[in-house]
Amino acid sequence: MVVQKNKLFREACLLTRKEAQKDVYMIDKWKGWAPVWSGEDLITKKGITLGTLKSIGIYVIKYIPTGKIMYVGQGVIWSRKIVHRKTFNKCLEAGGVKEVRQKFHSLSSHRNLSEAGIKMYAHDSKLKNWSFDCCVTDSKSLSKQMEKVWKDKFNPPFNVKGFDVT
Image (tube, rainbow, N blue to C red; front, side, top):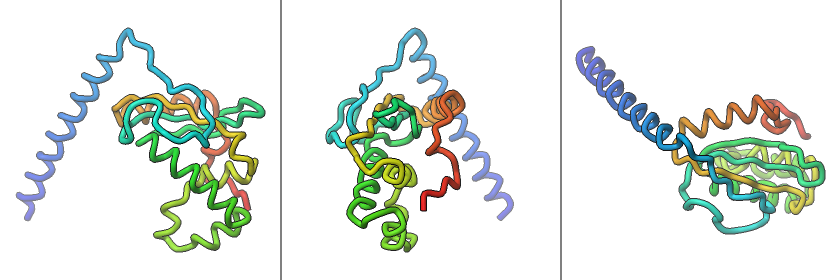
């Protein structure tokens, strides 16, 4: 068993190295280029304005009345936008944050909720007051670093863990 564990560890190391090499190649391709952003659209807008349904990147949710960046995230951007918007709408349909948490209290139901969507609703229940902007990187590691840099720069209030809205 120990021999098999060591072999699997070495295999994982090789795969990690290959992934890192891909990341370095991708980052080198970005030299001299400015990233393309989708442009601020209402979060209510449906459809894909940049990349594909499975594009990986960074996204920003902004509160339109103040222009403040309220949330920064990364991942499969269009599915994240859909989850944030659907969570907001579930709060609206349920009559509030407390009600949506009660309705979707089971673990499997809770996975379909986003804390950002809940915080958006608690801050302002008008979905038209929220915008979404994204940048496709097609690199998970680059997106994570971009997210970190943006969070450090803008300190978005909805990214804070334990932010209680009930």
